[in-house]
Amino acid sequence: MKHSLIFFILIFIHPYLFAQIPKAADYGVRHMIFSFESLPVDILIQSKSGEEMRKKPLFFFCQGSLPQPLLKYDEHGLYGIFPFNPEVLLKNYHLVIVGKPSVPLIRSTKALGAQYCFLDSLGQFPKDYVTRNLPAYYVRRNIAVIQFLHKQTWVDQNQLVVAGHSEGSTIAALMATSYKGVTQLIYSGGNPCGRILSIIEEARYKELDTDSTRYAEDWYQEWQKIVEDKTNMDMTSGDTYQATYTFSQPMMESLLQLKIPVLVSYGTADWSAPFTDYLRVEAIRKGKKNIGFKPYPGTDHNYFPINKDRQVNTAFFNWDRVASDWAQWLE
Image (tube, rainbow, N blue to C red; front, side):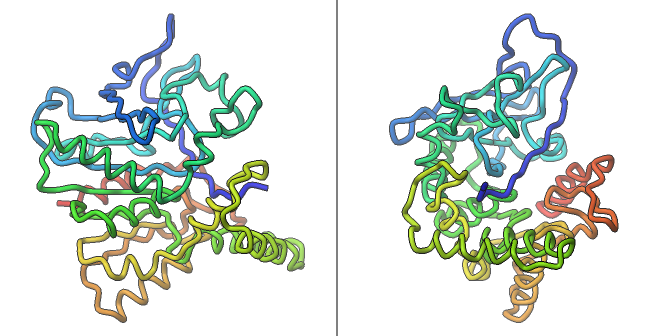
């Protein structure tokens, strides 16, 4: 069974009929390659057209889970890089996103597996991805990328916004707690009490249809195995035990100890919402005026509305509204 919470949004950015494989420039972004711990790292930078060399701070976005290429396309066109339209943020920032380890920058969706994941010749997640798919690695790598970018003449070092959604929220929060250069943090769709509790909450909801406790009990038994073998890097059941264990470490106290401005955004119908509400209660109790909260009522993990039968209504796309709210908060 999979241990990861899936974050996946696809947006076509313009129609495009391909006579050849597209390049980063076709997406309107710059591509830089950085070497870190013996692996090349793909960095994409999106800037306002004509202002690529204008000095601006970075908006560093940590994407969610799974080994998906940053750039995807099919016969109908290119897929968006960010889950939101970046235009609302480009006025004041250069947007940065970094690829997953050992995952190619660009692929046709026809060449990808389920959930648009890149698979090796054996039909599995690449080994170098699996061994590095850990919060500590992403934090080290992302900080190294930022330090590299801060040497560029078009980067203003006086401000650094780090944002992350889903799995990326944990990485972003850890970056903010370990790197003093971060000036604002946006924590989106995360569970401040750890990934495993979101998995159990989802299992509890499934039990409502069956009048059984077996789904959650199965996960408690699985969690016991994970804790007892938390360094296990076997990948045959999805995320490794070590990945699930480390992404399940509570971020509550780390978030409450931050002194920089923090924005917490979340859908109130997300599995993690009760734990984010708990974070909000604790922030009020501790008098944390630097932490703001932006709930989106009746929306799921990716801000889609949920109807009373808990079916996702993908006709209403709220991500652009979320990004606009982020931009307003930053101003």
